[in-house]
Length: 294
Image 1 (cartoon, rainbow, N blue to C red):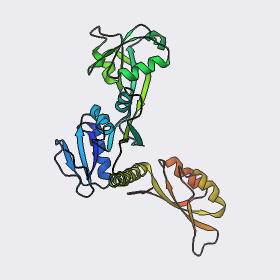
Image 2 (cartoon, one colour):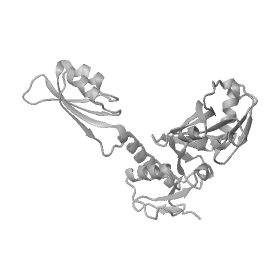
Image 3 (cartoon, rainbow, N blue to C red):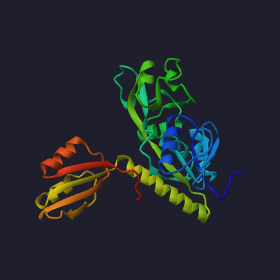
Image 4 (tube, one colour):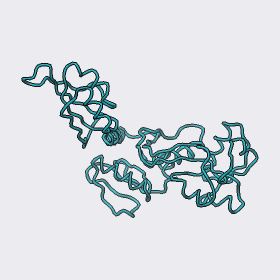
């Protein structure tokens, strides 16, 4: 039995997504007890228990309310959700990691067109997503569900095409296949249950989500400080990437000159600094942001 006085979050037991999920929670200030290979762990400084499970079990844990929150790939969540008539959880944040794509792969060198899928056998571990893709295009094909090694299906004569997750495409290439069409683009997301939750737990979930949103916002954000003349302020404000209205402070003893401070929520490249300088900025400093609460 789980302790219902504490919040629960399900994350992948092992793999890159597991490591990135742990890093995210660490960035949110959580100190987690427990060995890496354990099935559960407890946060020392927040009323939160972590449950380490298979990625395709995370939607069930969240949907059934065993865990109030979960971190999982959209591909797994969407495949699960397509099996039900109504939503069983909601996505509350896109996390910016774990990006991959579910793609149709065809024999290498084929002059592929979507219509070629008609009447063919397609091997996949994502039959519902594949079926939706075909239905949206009015194509009838036979879907062969496999739990793994999908890329071997053509070589074994099981199917001519496959629909599989692609990151670099190296595995497909090694098996004489090439990704030819995207079925579903995915990244890791934070989801929460739609089951009724006690008010105290709901407050804790909101507090944790606020921290996580702060970590996400901080990932690419930078704090920029620069000096500018009055006539250059408008152009500098326009150039600052992803910034809201900057803070403008008069410089003591220098009439018509200002210090400008801004949080930029997009990457700041050298090209951006060159544009700022050309617009009249000087003494430009770009600094990382350790924490941010939105």
